[in-house]
Length: 288
Picture 1 (cartoon, helix red, strand yellow):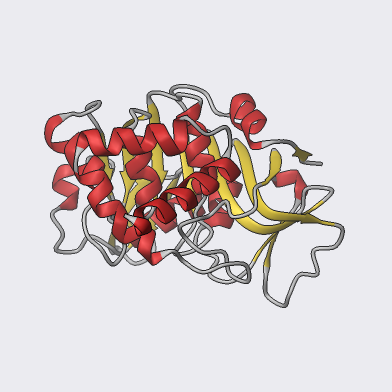
Picture 2 (tube, helix red, strand yellow):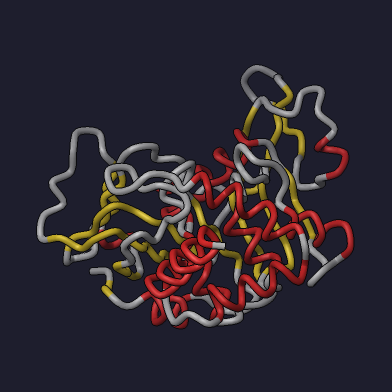
C-alpha cells in the first residue's frame, strides 16, 4: 500500500541529487506543486524528463536544479518561449544544460517500452528528420519479418516519476480522468512514483474508462489541493491563462525571475502558502 505523506516528506525521501526525474501531465494535471518542492529542497544535477516541458521546468532549470533535459517540445503554451530554458542553452546560466531531443511519438513509445520492461522502443518516425544526426540515441533497426528499416531508441525508466491526479483513496489507489497523457506509462516505467492529488477520499467512484493506478505502483501519495496550478485539473479548476501570459515577462529577465521565485517559492513553506502569495501579489498589482 502506498504511504500517504506530506509532499515535503515525499520529496525528501524519494528524490535525490543526480536522479532522473519525470514530471508528467499533458495540458492539465501538471505537477507544479512537486516542482516547487524540488526547488525548495535545492535538488541539483537532475536529469529532467518530460514530453512537453513548460513553465514548471522553466522554473526548475532557472533555479539550477537541472543538468540535462530529455524532451520532445518545450514552450509556454499559447504564449512563446521558455526564457530560463533558452538562457541555460545559450549562455549556461545558471548552469549549462545538456539536451536530448526526440519526437513526441518517440517519447511516448520510450515510456511505453520502459513500462513494458523492454529495452528499447521502435517507431517509423524520423524519416526525413535531422534529429538522428544530433541525437546519437536514435538508432536504426531492420525488421526481421519485413526488412523495413525503423528507428529504435532506449526505453525511459526514470528514477522517479511525479504526477498530479484528481483523487486517491486511503489505500493509495489513484484516479486520473480527463486527458490522460503519458502519466500511466511514466509511472509504470519508474523506480519510484510520487503522486500529488486534489483530494483523498474513501471511494474513488471511478467513471467509465478512467485510469486507476493501483497502490502497488505508487510509492507515496500527497494531498495538495490546487497542486496543478496554473495548469488545470479536470473537474476541479480551470487553466490560469493570465498566469501563463504573465510568466513571459517574469521569466524574461534574470533578476526579475529570481526575485519572483524568492518571494513566491523559496519564501513559502508549501504550495498552499505559495498560492496565497501569488493571489496577494495579483491584488496588489491590480491596485497599482
